[in-house]
Length: 228
Image (cartoon, rainbow, N blue to C red; front, top):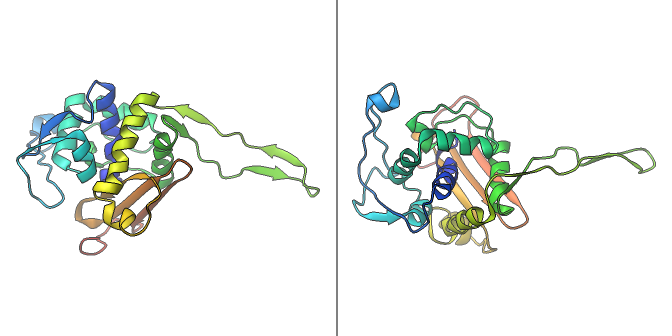
């Protein structure tokens, strides 16, 4: 599961609906009824199980990876809009159209998540990963060469706005200690992700040239360690 690394898809859908990084929403408890979830009531909580009970901009919510705000934003733009955004970003796995998808309950493959973030590095265009660049014969003649495939996911303005917010994750947010203060000061953006019970841990980052991602977990989901 992608956990909070899924959140850029939510905010991209919100920006397309007319919201901005300066849009404000309160960080306070939220309960989604059983009727809305289709199963049982859902009470999303923040990473530290605390609420500031103060308003926060979308930009700050992205930096701090605030779950309550991501859930509220996702519900405001609609489950279907977030689902469609995830598909446009190239996620092909099982994505249930339920509120919990907002906090990364979908099934994903790391290669797809990393390719999805190429959208930010390319100001709106996602690049399909290529395993074989070219095939040469014994004399070095190229007999086959793959052409990079780009797909427009976001308009440049929306992509630039979200890319700027994701840079703030590195300079001011959840990626600061492990990336920027750890010595990687090249201009970059990214997003952290941690799932319930510490079964999956993510970081996907990008510069203008390179996108890279790390997933930590087990083949069969299980607890990794405290504060993984």
